[in-house]
Length: 193
Image 1: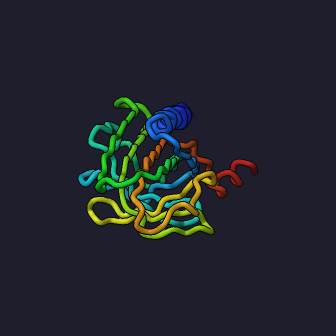
Image 2: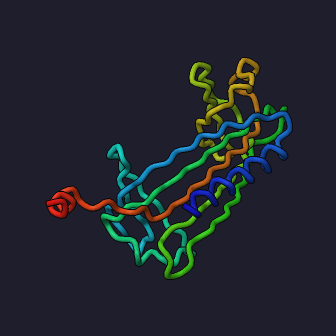
């Protein structure tokens, strides 16, 4: 729980910092929490594959700094908390640019595997498309790649159009902690008899 609280507080601090840096901006925060089950561990490639509560499968690259990958085994459950924020500002002129920063806090060697990561991306790009109904904007960055970002309700999308240059600060946080595993149903039924 400490890691989840840490990540939430840590990400809120980054969101506040991002707000201070982006004048006349709006911030959207979207938070997701789930218990996932490890399905595969590739220690050499430092990748962990897990299945979410709805059956979806994803792979997470474990940072080199993580010291407890040897404790992660298929079948174990972890609680993931993901916090994402997007700040959008219209900027006149300028060339597309991108910069990113990352902060990682990991469990010490020998402790339960877990940790928190906060990543902040500053992107100046060109609006490719706008979904006014669902409040998304597609922004083409300096390498020509396009990202779709959620836009806050108070950002006037009607003032944006394809071809506008805008500035986006996108902050996301991920906290991982080992979750207590419930006993298997068959074992629990035997214990009750």
